[in-house]
Image (cartoon, rainbow over all chains, first blue to last red; front, top):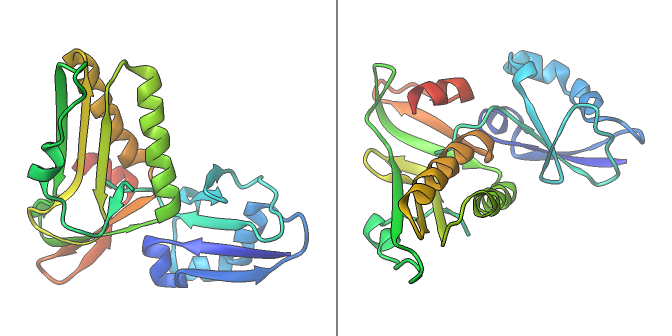
Length: 80
Length: 141
């Protein structure tokens, strides 16, 4: 299946704004993030603090993904 | 539309009249200040997950409307590059009586800081820059 991953702020500077990846069916958010681990480790040390959204709804790493889902990887927010 | 890349004009934002049933209006504005944790700040840059941020602000307003008897809630949050003194966020809440407007306005700004996907980068006078993290942001606010 195909997943669109979105990056913002600090992560946007590292990964670019978005990318599509092809993964096997039924992967969870956490498993998709594992696939990026090497890149994350090189650049972003606070993986435990990441916040996830799937199709604009906050989700945990257990959330199973479907084809064409939009997964956002977000650092803690700092608006206002 | 709660996000804008245009300069927020406070006079214009706060000039909108409250509904006739409202006897109170509370307004909040967050501005770019020239220092943070002892460092001289030159400017800010705000990034956002635009579609989700719009949705989350709308959800916060709907929650405030359930929790308090309020008239109208308006929110405008700036994105992009901001200079010192520019308005980053403006909120106004009207209600029949003042207590609800004060509480709902506070609820809105705290909710925006915690739950709306917007991120702030500080550009310092010394040429360095840094994305502000959540805890850091709470301490700084």
